[in-house]
Image 1: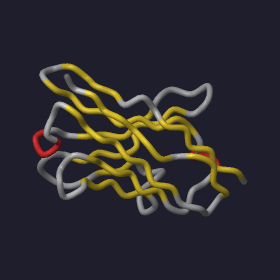
Image 2 (image 1 turned 180 degrees about the vertical axis):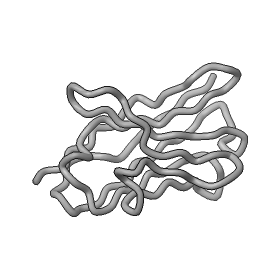
Image 3 (image 1 turned 90 degrees about the horizontal axis):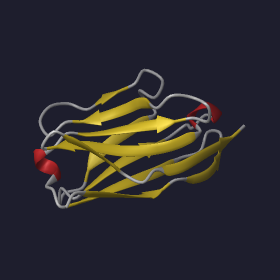
Length: 115
């Protein structure tokens, strides 16, 4: 059974940093593309960053240069390192992957950035 378990997040002042984690159970991350999305209050969920199993990472323009996505050496956990946070980065962050044609999502992690 595929399960994505998230941790991290919290409350930070503008300019601060946070790191989110997404640990995969039931799959090998080396074989799967991983993405991060976020959803601000009253807004649609938006793509934030992508970490393909092969190839280069990619980022939404709004976070490029501030956010970094990476895997751990054991290929079990994906991280989203967020620096220079802005109030507009506030929202619930989700990791996601597709396995066998199905989308799997983490439970979501709240990130709140105060001005």
